[in-house]
Image (cartoon, rainbow, N blue to C red; front, top):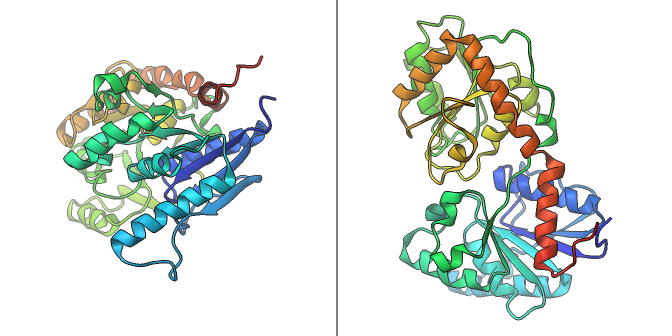
Length: 370
């Protein structure tokens, strides 16, 4: 076991169920299992959060009602409280993520011995919109001991000098998606998984399915997840006469079991970093159709026409055309799914988590142990 006394801290807004939050919880579980001390610092505690593994200490950095003041005053009070937390926990390394959290982590650890690694998990243009936020990112990220990105396109957001300090580290596939590929006969079920919000654009999946539904009467569309647009999506399903063909089971805990026998998987987002749901579906060996969205996560996974399809953002016609090809050619769809499943080895948890660990050891100046 390597460096059992090293202390890793994670800093994130909350553990509300989402892609970045799941990555942090998975990494925390790995480092605890390796004998590290692990602290999870979050600003908030939300409902519907991921459960922390045993051995991880949780610290909240949000202000209490009695500590709150005006808007500007609160900003400085949050900074002072977060700095006090980092001074007290004395971590060897802090990993932060998402927008302003990275700024706070860098400033709160300034002149402390703690190493700080910042990570950008979504499209950097969305995490740091506008000239001021971009200027802050381009300036403050020089204070980081490490910068973790998810895609090659995302790295290009920064000036060339700063790009040289960036490293791309993968997200691991959750262990429940690491299994032999289903080889039986597949129903013509098409699936999508994700929060029902504007960015995930489930409406595109409904529109694409509407174009092929009559031609393939045995096909069904399942949209897993929940969110603010659920009611609106239900209305569109009714308006298009697809009730009984399109299903919305909500949030489920057994996603892998539900989708592993599906015919095809759709990702319809306007933007994504490295989409975990797409990676998981490909790991299961599903034939996947994804939007070729910024900042390039899907195109880092899919070789269009070989192990899946990439289509333009919000182009339901192109998605419907790809679905038609797959449904008309089961053999081709099966072969694409087999090629997609090969990603499972590259993104398996042990391999990916080990890469994160070795990167952290390098940042902390610890010699790599056998």
